[in-house]
Image (tube, rainbow over all chains, first blue to last red; front, side):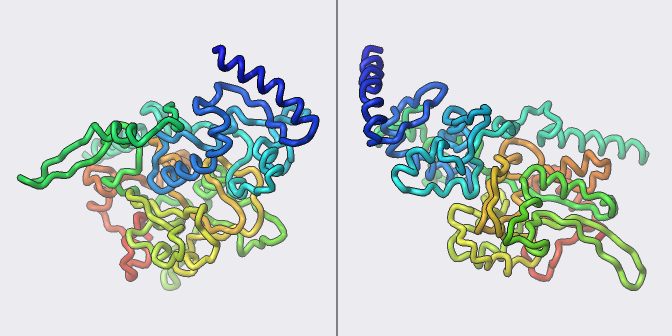
Length: 154
Length: 249
């Protein structure tokens, strides 16, 4: 706790200085729990973490143990405009762009991936058997249909 | 969530401490490291997902499956200066067949046939065109270079190339300019235990012309239907063993 306070004080001291001199980009504030690994680790390694998980997800269908996905990034790292709407990557205030513009590195993620959070979270969790579009419920319906057809033919 | 910065070689070895050993024969064992519940969520090699489409049940005037696919995966409304109607994406399309002699007309949806020996995977120079262990054929857009060999190789015209920028994609299906795309059998839904969007829409329309299931499970409704009634694979002469089959075509 004391360490965190000390870091916060340090950050508080150093940020305005940088902002004044324009030496470093001002990273937009995030919401939610901080990364257990610390911001420095993520700043250095986010692309490695994302690259590893993208292969697991796409090629092996691993969707449960994934620790980094772009949509979960936006759960906390969303910058909103004056109207309160999340800004897309076409806006230079976008969380990713702030540093990437500074470093003159173009992230390629958003050619295909959505750069804002989405209301569509239906497929984040495993389907429960009682959900009508779950495979389990679908197979139950087919079974019931088969039974009723067998009855009708008798 | 584990702290990955602190994940060391030692931790990885520890996670492998739970070694599952399977004895095949005396002296022959199969060992898997870290074989835990967590691995159960991956694509399952013991399954092969497929579709059985009954053309008799498919209504010629209904295109709910196409609409549902567009909504689910966010294609079909790209426009843009480099797009033309001929090059618009089509993950699934309704095809009408007419017998010239008898005049009989049937209609059925055609999408990626999720072949067992997919020509699109054969020709891909980067390994982007790929097949999962459960038979679903996908494009890994991370490494697709947009050469479109796979589009040439596919006998079913199932793949499309995106010609214009795609803003604010659906989270279900990342898609963008310069890469090839096709039906994913709604892999994002299947992996979460849900049926594909076209199957859901077809059932909701009352036609129930698309049957979804596991082809490797002999007791699944799709396997039973295939065993009981005649069905065909499109372009069966190519012996691709597609996962999508048709009845009454």
